[in-house]
Length: 105
Image (cartoon, rainbow, N blue to C red; front, side, top):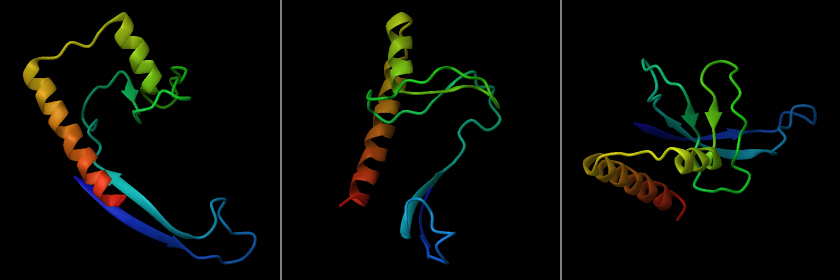
């Protein structure tokens, strides 16, 4: 489940102006799919390899790695999934992509 929110921040004075300025900000709030699961690593994927590598640092739970980390892992130990799981994943990605592309129009 996703929620799309827009927050507007008004300028209350020169000392309180946010770094990004004033005006509306768009947020997407998503459910926590990791709740109740024991997770060793999390990947924050954006679909880009430019500056998308992170050192695996354990601070407050499992490390959050990026696109290039997943690519590196898959070159060493490929992720093998069933055809049914691949089809489900592909459908989810198409649905999300379609939803977000409609928002940018």
